Length: 337
Ligand code: ADP
Ligand code: MG
Image 1 (cartoon, helix red, strand yellow):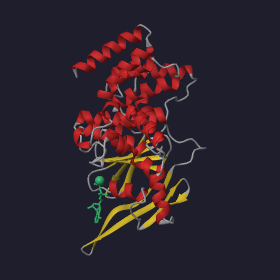
Image 2 (spheres, protein in one colour; image 1 turned 180 degrees about the horizontal axis):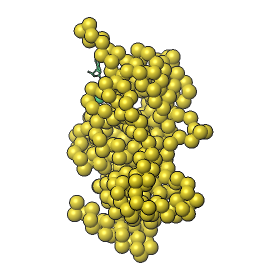
Image 3 (tube, helix red, strand yellow; image 1 turned 180 degrees about the vertical axis):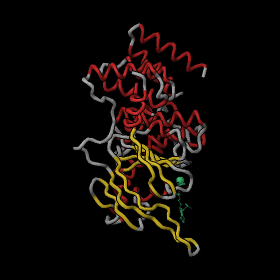
Image 4 (spheres, protein in one colour; image 1 turned 90 degrees about the horizontal axis):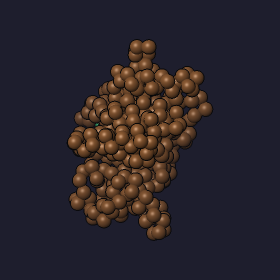
C-alpha cells in the first residue's frame, strides 16, 4: 500500500496545482489498486466540471463510508447548487426507460434422486441499462442457475425472460445462439480462456466467430488490451499471465462484440482480495465510462459496494432489492445537518 499513499499524495498535489490531467492519472492509479480509498474519490470529485460526475465520486465515498462528513458536505453543496436535485447517476430507473432484461416468475426445478431442488424459485426482476446489477447470495442460493437462464444456456421450468422485449424461452436455439454471440458478453470465475491462444487471440475469438476482417480485429483487440491495461501482454498465453491478468483478458474478450449486457459469474471468486478489487473497479469503470450494462452474481459481499442495485437471493427466492441511491439518501438523511 506504500505506492498507494505516494500516488495519492502526487494526485492531491497535482489537483491543488490545477494540473487536472496529471491529478486524474495518479488518482485513477490509487482507486485501481484500492477502490475503497475515500480520499482519492474525494479528490477526484474536485476534478470534475460536470456536477453529476462530481456527485458520482462523492456517492462512491458514501457507499464506502456513509459517515464521511466531507463527502456529505460536498454532496449537499452540489445538490444546493443544482436546486436540490439528486445528481448521482446511474440511479433508479426513470419512467421512460425500458429494462434490458425483464424476468418474471422465473422458476427452475431440478429433479435429483426423486427429490426436487428449487434452484430458482419464482424470481421477478428487471435489469436496467447502463447500471451494474448485482445478484448476491450464499453458495447454493441459485445465482449461477439464474444467470444461465438469462444467458439462454438453460431452460426455465416456468416463467418468462424478455430480452429487449423478446421472449428468450420462445426463441429458436439458433436465435439464442446468435443472441449469446452478438449481444451478450461472459465473464466466469475460472476465466475460461483458450490455453493455446495468446491474450490477443483470445480477445479476437468472438470477432472471428462473426467473421470480422483481420485489420478490424487487430484494431479492436489492441483497443481492448489497452483498456484493460494489458497492451504489453498481447502475446502472452494464459499460463504466462497472473489470475488477475487472465480475468482482464476475459473481460476484454467479453467486450469484443460491444455487447448489450455483460454477465459475470463470481468474477473475483478465484482472486485474492486486492486483485479482486482491481477487477471490480475495472467492471465499475466499464459502467461509468462506457455505459455498459453488467449483471454480476457473486457471494462476495464487496460487490454490494460497486453495484447500482443489489438483489439478494436466498434458497432460489429474491429476498431483497436495494438501490444505491436509496442507500445514499438514507445515509444523507442520517447525517447531521
Ligand atoms: P449458486 O451459484 O448460488 O452457488 P447454483 O445456482 O449453482 O447456486 O445452485 C442452486 C441450487 O441448485 C443448489 O442447491 C444446487 O445444488 C442445485 N443445482 C444446481 N445445478 C444443478 C443441477 N444441474 N442438477 C441438480 N441440482 C442442481
Ligand atoms: Mg454459482
